[in-house]
Image (cartoon, rainbow, N blue to C red; front, side, top):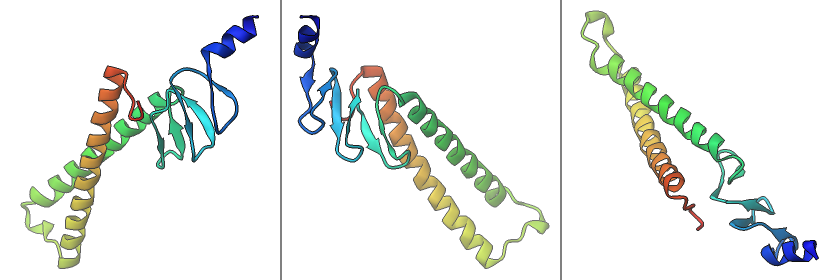
Length: 129
């Protein structure tokens, strides 16, 4: 009788053919049900859900910190170089410009992801819900 009551509380996944807990979704890439699934992350090659949201948030924080650090280093070495020993040749100048654009793009993308995940954690709403 107890197992029948538990089965009534959980719905059945049509792909897995197993009982899935509340707030879980089936991932087509992983081919399994994930509790409180937020999304499938290609960076981590895993589904982001209740079990690894902390790790994903820390990954975003570390990536954001590295982007900020690289932007500070590039800006400091490129814009505040006032001595005569700091002359850059044309190739190095172009390389610094390309690296700055890549760092800005990574910074903006990581910032938007970090804000989206923070909003989801504060409100309790995932990207699938």
